[in-house]
Image: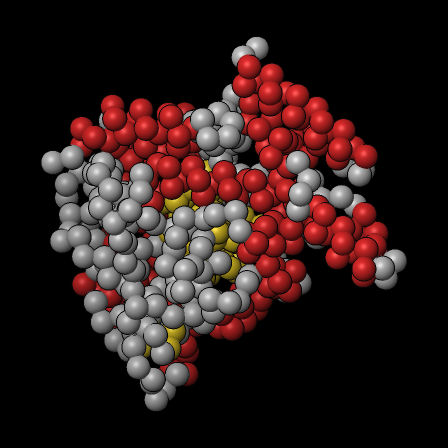
Length: 423
């Protein structure tokens, strides 16, 4: 055993005793954490570029900043980068794929023509690694979305195009579920909205509801595919009005039994989503949680271990909501090493969940007893508990680099692989 491993073992033994005195089983917490999959988002690896034969304009109110060298340019490069990220994240996780990441053989395949065959390489890759996959229609970066409207567009032909695209995506998600043995969550987000104040807010929402009804008219077994709808407060070019608002999708999901996607960056900057989880799960069957971090706006920064993230994890664990929650990441930062961004964001999400799993039962007991003084005192004392020693042990027990050691692997990969992509 190395000196570093001995140090981790010693720290863990002390932490285990400390937690045991508070009625917490650290081994049970680590076993529970190992069962929680996080869906890594493919678009962090190539700055939301995709692999279509197109001009590369992003649009849809999306913007990626930074020019760190070495972004993935092909499906094989992206898969290699994902392999490296997965190799540094403890646990068995998933991949979240957008529709324009299909492999089209250099041919122009329009969005309403995509089929499972265009994703066979991704399915083979996921099957070899024993992981599940999730999916998303790509309703941006396309001439038919150039004016900022898709499923709520006033022109029937435009709506029909996007209805066909989203319907095809549901079939592809079901294909993933069948081939990989775990249901895909197919999440629908559209950029539809207005830069300035509209006169008619109702008609676009009526058209959107009709489009959704048509998309979801085909019955697909939940064992293969789960449908989710995602709201947004505003975007670039839709600052004043978004058709698919939180209230719209909450009502639609509750009425039709769909998953509601709660994205941590899609609400007011001072509005946390932790409190929304127990509220919406009273009325929708399950939720899709997009872990992100907005800075001043929906800027999709890499997830850090802040109070907002810990509050989300605590809400899920305290109320036993994990079994009804699908967790995925949603950020894109091209200013730093893209693989490091995946690793940092995913490990921080797992750390927040571990902290929640290690919460002493005395907090709930104090609240039940009406002792609010003790509740606050114990909640603050819990911040200083040695959860980091448990995290280090968890990483080592799963043959993953603890602490910051993973950064050495990323640097080697950057030197040996990413640097060769420049130019």
